[in-house]
Image (cartoon, rainbow, N blue to C red):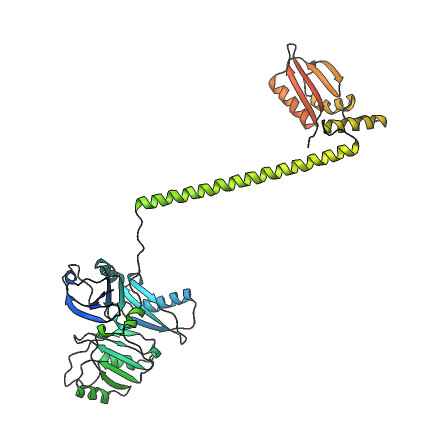
Length: 407
């Protein structure tokens, strides 16, 4: 699979006519073709990647005490606030893992730049400064033949990088560029042992710079070419262009919404049916246990389990009370005494006749209004009596007896 990598030394113009250097890499990561052209003339590749110059994608490093992931993110953003000219919200910020020595490396890129890259079909973006190995005690000043470049600090200084082009070298220039001199002598930086200069630098200029520099040893390496970087470094570089999840269509979202609603409704109905079945099963089990208890008691008392067991118990209890010379609850006087408080609420002269038979009282009244009838029957039920009423041609008839509790 061929990969087309484009080097951006400046943000792409909206017109799309600006030319950029590009290179084609084979499946092994080896560059086999290079060129420079506008986007519409770029060659075809199975994948497009962007290599951003160090000034477009700087690498910063901060040394912090051991922090959790959430606190580390807040601490890094606090450090960046006074170092960036644009708001943090306008930057894509990729925070690396904190090393054992406390250093944390941060890769940056502006959101507007990344948006423009997406419009050009770029699938991945990385910083040019990550395409060189950061040594433990040596810095690298990498300068391309065109003159643009960057400085990569060693691991003892977090492996950060900053853009630094090689100025036109004149015979009178006796010292290193001021930016590099300040970086080497910074109070919070550990001076490197060696500074490797990857550039076409005359020997006399190197000697002049070495004599004026007492910080580290200077060496000259072949000019920097990002296309010659090791394939592993391309693969390990920080991804600056976050992947965008595909946006579902309106019909798809609507269909998914209906599916979720139907699923939730099905789950709710299933839970309702299961809960109802469980409640009915529990009620039936309790009813069966109570009925079984009644039958056991009836068998012990010599009663027939086929007939109305509560009625049989009531009769047996009444007979036992009578044998002892006592009144039973459903005898005429006890039953009438229980109903007296309710009957007192009726207007005087309404009672026509009262008959006691078969453990129940039957009363006949003059016609009563519906409200009075309902009030009377309600009071009788509260007194533990079972009222049965009906209207006749002569008035209102009421039969009362003791309420029988069934299992």
